Image (tube, rainbow, N blue to C red):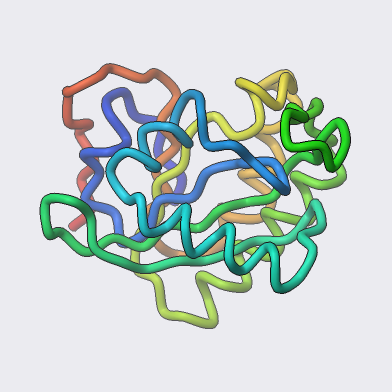
Length: 168
């Protein structure tokens, strides 16, 4: 069941937060920056994993760890976009619907394989990824709508405000 909510995704009580990033993302803006600040070990682990195996768009990278405040959180990084180049100062490029489609398919598989009971995600690939929400939203419905768990799409960000999630 997909529900559209308003609020701060960082306050979500969902088992897992999923969000879009670039293959060598600098984690320096938007939700990625907020997650980096709250879970610095996730970014360190991501960078280490990416050096071990070159990332490709359309894949996911799942992480579970402890935040600075001691809470445990599952985060799934969806590699929805590539980079301008391999240069250290390179910036992410626009996301492609094909890569978002692959990521959402992999996310659905991961949710099923790992018994995840609830999932929160933002308006995926519409910020830095620059895709129209009207193109991305049907893909979310197609891949995540049949999972039989609460899927919370944070359509409007309201900093510091918990969403009405109704997870039970």
